[in-house]
Length: 374
View 1 (spheres, rainbow, N blue to C red):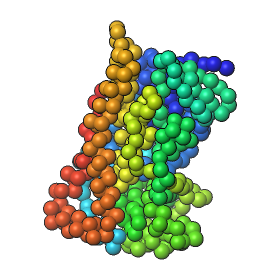
View 2 (cartoon, helix red, strand yellow):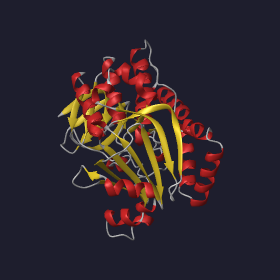
View 3 (cartoon, helix red, strand yellow):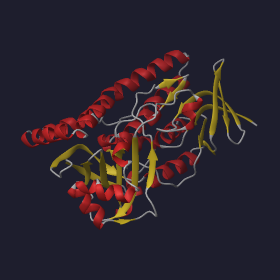
View 4 (cartoon, rainbow, N blue to C red):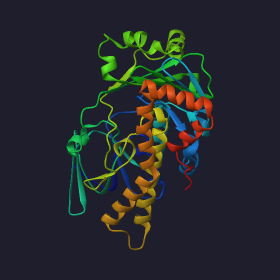
């Protein structure tokens, strides 16, 4: 069976769904292929900067109706538990991917996006057309492809862009616990860091990233948490009193922070497929959403223009806009990770922040953008 669509999106995460919604609102025919079904949980920090709110309003996403939690403060602690407190320049909100992604999926469906649960297995490009194959032996022909397949996907191997193996492991769990709903906390421990923030239904999302060398000498996650995470007194106090809301934690391995191409083999990459910022920056979800906005605006301009751009011009424009929006933020994220994972640099940064408190919001701004006005 052959299906034709002007634009095909691979992946139904934040970037893919926002792209599909934006394009569909402008009357562009869109097909989105997602291998999993919703609602479901994902390993994610689940904090979003308020910079996305004007864009959400433009798309018709009423975040308050989803019981999102307003967040305005940041607490960072060193491995020994010394705390740096700061206000978030723009603020943000906490919401689970279980709720948000499912809401976006339903919204895309109402707008007429052709939503398909299947797995893309092949992508080929020839004579200005893409041919997409799936595990259910479906074939799709389209003019443009948006790669929104996340940080780890077999489709990267298909496109011959698979990254080197990475030593990072990510773990996520929701808990019932006492926690200040207005703050997001980032607690460092030996070999990693853990983020805590409240999402809807007053649950606390705990998501931590750890270097595999720090984890591998322990039998299981419980032993690792008891022996390593509990070295930070704030994490010890939290985990000893918190009640798990899941049967077991969600985990992903080989989380990779290598540089990626925003365009690869004529496929427009958005979200984590284009570049992953370190979770400690707390801005990955907002960046995924903004990448969808940047690309969608260019595609709409091209689609509705009297003459239209050549593919090469369109690709050049997207790459330029993507680098302008995210290049410095990704660099800042890499620098911050090196600082926070080095004990001596961590202590020096703590002393500097205590001496000059205004420096913390300025650093936060380096990994965040401006309001996404359409």
